[in-house]
Length: 366
Image (cartoon, rainbow, N blue to C red; front, side, top):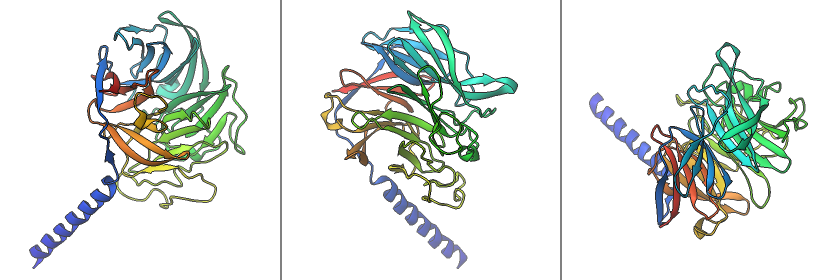
């Protein structure tokens, strides 16, 4: 009888797994939008961030520590000199880049004494093909030898710079009110830290309780800062940032431990913690975020574009009012892990493929 019982149990488990599969994946809609995808220029190993200089010229970072000027019209690439030294270990290195006027802002993992590193923000002026007058504007006070969870997305909004920091793989530091770990930092363009937004937080802290921010963008109508971050096993989140809000990691989470157990007490909500406006279960490992407000793809206008590292896809989230309501995949497994997303002036979508043979791609109307 035992072998027969084993067969029945295996069949039951298989059926349960099939049901869970359809629950998790049946809500993903695949778009029928006709698109053309093309590589721009030579491959770049593990690119991470992209920002427009002017016209068809863009800056692209490579995690190894290189910075390139790329002309998306011709594909020509030029290396940029005088980039700061980076801690290029696992997820660390030269990460996000944002340019405004002639000023370049770089988020990177800064080498520190004793083999440690800290998430840092660097500013310089771009003159020709070199950075000049560079200075470190901010360095996190949490140092670690870990190569994980640097965060490192930048948004410029008004007079301020917003910088998302991960918890470096040491979760409890996201709730430590003495540390910049697991926080969004707000600082002036000259590096002066803004007043703390929460009680007993270090100067400059705008929000806390973040695990690993990988996408951040300013809403074109409301001006609010949207941020997405990685959960553990499931529970990736989109949050609309509020001054002084605590987003709960690791006390609250919609994900589970990688081995399958509960995170902490298994809470998904608790008093004193802000709720996400969107959750992915299972995780898509989101990276890069951009609001789409151009005319090349009218079907996407007013929505949010998010890259996926795990599923190697580009997601479009339709908004109902000012919150996500549904999602669809508009590019599936064509260029590898999608690390960053940007909308070009003509409405084309620029994507970074985070692969050894990765690089910059242009998605346009076919």
